[in-house]
Image (tube, rainbow, N blue to C red; front, side, top):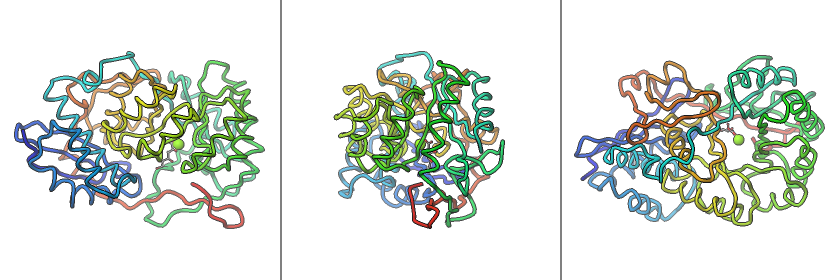
Length: 408
Ligand code: CS2
Ligand code: MG
């Protein structure tokens, strides 16, 4: 069996997705997602210029060997662009494998460990009351877990994932006005004064059962993160996400010495080597990698197995940055993983997105039920894809009030 060709599509209804379709001499094709948010043209070029010409003629069933060929063969290993590109090919090869076996992917991993996988939604508010309304709406839809982000009093601009005006829906994933980012202003002291109390009020309002998550988005120093984690300990958070910049593996040691709050990290990790120390030293509780830019199913499965040895559960990244193709790959991993924790999930569910990526993975009452169709269980409509093209976008850049650059 041979790979005969592959096509790349960049674009989408609400944001740019990078989709690969790999064709074979037996008519079976596979789909992969190489979306690297706000840098989408880069994995597309890596795939187009280097990886696809090498793929043609290879046997698509040898997904492990193909992964190793590209990873080791690159010499300059890791990094989000390369790993997103390898990841997309890997997903597509698993999709082909599942279709050849006539089985949904979770069966090839070891079958189902659960019926449905718990997801969390994103609640956000300009102020605490606005946020309470947003949480209530999700609870009424049956969600068991909600990530909460709130505007900080006195902060000169809206902060991470928080809209400018009440009830507005902020697209914080991409600002499509071009490659020049918007500037957001941040003040750690105001955040540290306000947020622990706000989280306590949310717990008091919604009672003990709601799983409350909060994302600090890498903005605290290790000492501040330890202070924050200690302060929010009585809230009983499900997790505290990215309290410190993710490159600094030492940072979490200090937090661990001061608090038992569960820590989630990893949405910017690309490799098992980025989380090896954190997992083996049991400094984290949830690993947040995504199949997209952590090298696909082959590599993420290795991370999941390593994590399982150290009581670390999965909490895969699922921001709208990812297309329904990589989300489908994660639904299959979530159905199987013995150490599954939770899945971040934002309903893309617009008619345009469903038309571009038809699938029957189901979301009901805050749980995802994986599709039983062979392979990934998601398709890609090339005619629909012709409606969309690449639009340049960017993440905001964060500055302190005196102008100093800070972490987004
Ligand atoms: C975030 C992301 O979902 C999350 O937890 O931290 O939304 C992140 O801001 C985006 O993926 C950046 O592209
Ligand atoms: Mg995050």
